[in-house]
Length: 161
Image (cartoon, rainbow, N blue to C red; front, side, top):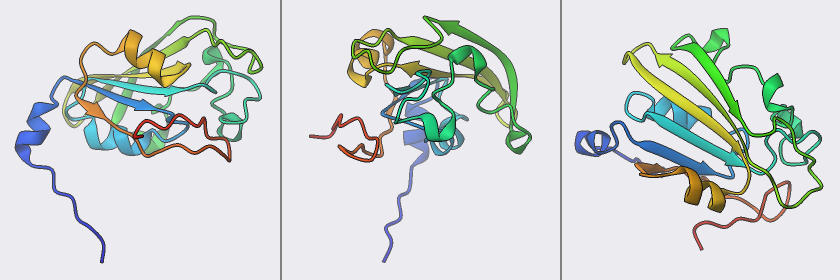
């Protein structure tokens, strides 16, 4: 028997204009964006492998390419619910995957969510989740986390322990 989760209107209203934070996100963007874009303003996806060419965690799906070479995340025809507005890069667009002390890079893309007529910002940040949370998140509305593993490219950052 599968469980069914129901989010009440009061819960949705409590996250309006807030921030969603997803550490160790990898390529897992679309569920969080599609669920929360009518409500949340800022989406923070953090992974140590973003924009680090050849990084084992992100190379299989192209998120290891330098930030200035990334295509808009939602700018593809299959995502006609979103209109790409602009992008901004803060920090070095590429990083050597072998250097443990990661210098962050934030690729921010702004979109119009057509159904709600709201502007949303999607931030992909290279670095560790803890430092991103401490430095970038002033007010949290949604903590979105599906887990991380020690193996198979996981970072081993176990947030729920």
